[in-house]
Length: 155
Image 1 (spheres, rainbow, N blue to C red):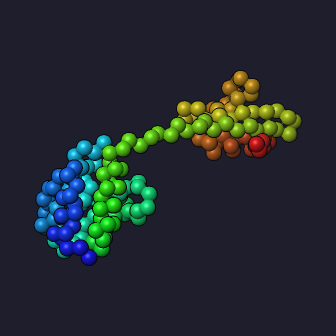
Image 2 (cartoon, helix red, strand yellow):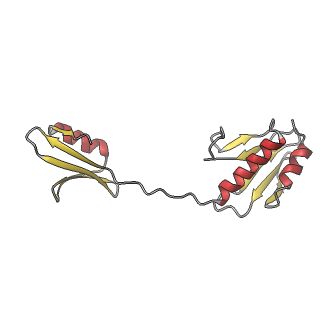
Image 3 (cartoon, one colour):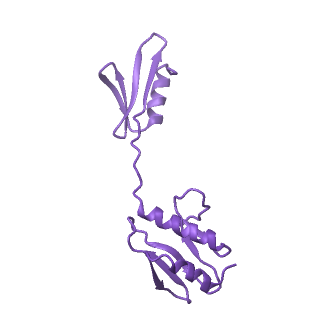
């Protein structure tokens, strides 16, 4: 296990981090250029060697519910990688993936066809270009379709 001083030296080799003392002889390190409200990269580094690095949403880490991973037993290589990943995560804008609208075809036993389309948070049923019904939840739309004897057309 790395000592407190060794961990501090590793952390302080990242010039983009700012040291801030907190209670009980613990130290936090902030990334002030974070693109998010969150700026703490290292939280509560303690003289006993315990400490946490913020890795929320980063693949390959088993973070707790606060997005932190404990680095008490981390090797120098592991600590450097975790800190670098944290900084990278706080300095990159998440790309918003535009969700493809959901569109389903439904057919009744007599051959009538309806199209179920998600639009702006609503589930709308169309017969051709005509809006037949609108629902606030997918489950309500499906319930209605099934009650009316419609089955989904598999693509």
